[in-house]
Length: 95
Image 1 (cartoon, rainbow, N blue to C red):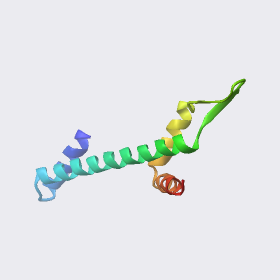
Image 2 (cartoon, rainbow, N blue to C red; image 1 turned 180 degrees about the vertical axis):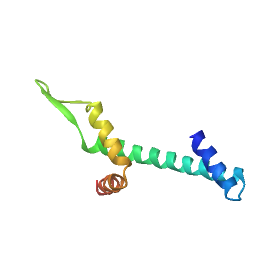
Image 3 (cartoon, one colour; image 1 turned 60 degrees about the horizontal axis):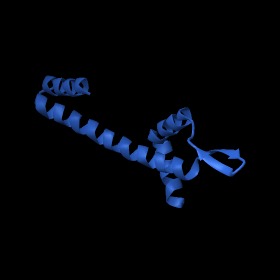
Image 4 (cartoon, rainbow, N blue to C red; image 1 turned 90 degrees about the horizontal axis):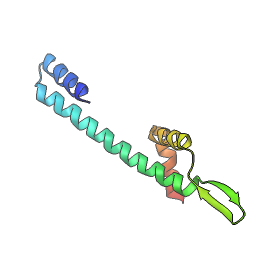
C-alpha cells in the first residue's frame, strides 16, 4: 500500500505534477477499494447465511453446522469479482 502511494507520487512528480497530489489520489483509490471490498464481503456473508447451509442429519433432526472454511473463502473471493458481486446483490434483492 505504501509502495503504491510512493509510486503514484513519483509518477505524478516525473510528469510535471506534485508528488502530494499523486500520493493523495493513490491513497484515496486504496480507501475506496477497501470500502468496496468491505461492502462486497458483507453482502457475500449475508448471502451465505441466507442461502448456503451445510447441515448434518442427527437423531434430533437437522442441525446446522458451519460451512467449510475453503467454501466460504471461495464464495468471498467470487463475491469480490464484478460478476459475483452483481449476482449476489441480485440474489439478495430477490429474497
